[in-house]
Image 1 (cartoon, one colour):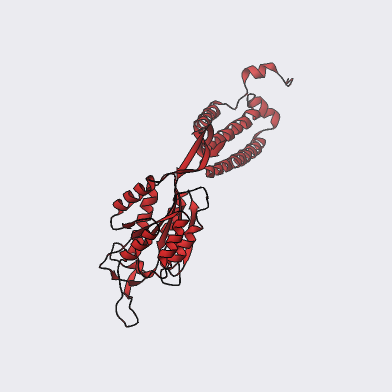
Image 2: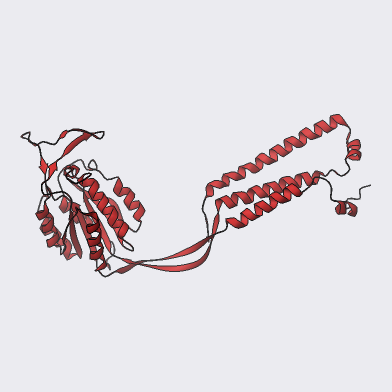
Length: 344
């Protein structure tokens, strides 16, 4: 098994036809110049040791050197051993509130950005777990299906914003029901849902929905983002503040952290409420929760330990370049004495 680290350097091989074309052009120019100077018989007498084969050989050696240099830059890697990796963990799904109230700046830089920072730091602290992300406002939508690809998950997480859902509100019921479809391993007994929200504008009998999810083996933990004092919801255009959101009576809307709502959801699903003000404390709490759960082996991979092989090609290129420099274009004396072609 092998890998090519930098396959883009295959383009270096295009130098070979360039070298060959230049060699042919120089050969044609030499022949025309020599023809004007003297006929072929006289040229043989004037330069009896000149070898056409040696000139061609030098070009071939130079081409091989370029090939070796190209492969050295590509750095092929050859597998040396196989290892079995057992991955054990918990299925973790994050439901992120992207409603307009998450734009409030009562917690820096704003509730939504703080929520994304929290989830990112939690993901960074995970090891063998699988993760998924759901976004919700007036309706819920799948952002990242359950996966072990943490890098891609964080990339999609960073792109989440309040414009992803046209209808406003906080459809926590839909988010919980969608999370139930995320856990695709029936043998996984530990299923965790983290709801990251400010707890505002939750509609419907969310405690009943959370209780139903718990019967399916899903524990729900809520992370509250915001302050009890609350703050207005800014309306910005191109990053510039235009005004603040107002209600139907033209009163400025103040959105506050709904801790009681979030605590109610967590209690109904055998979970806990976590205040999201301190990132380090949130990460430590989540890690303690997950470490206290039984881990299930849900993936076993075999991978190859690859080792660099560029040094061999680099050594070959250097040897061929030195050989090309030392290779003279005159005939080899001992080979000439053999008279292989019965030359007179």
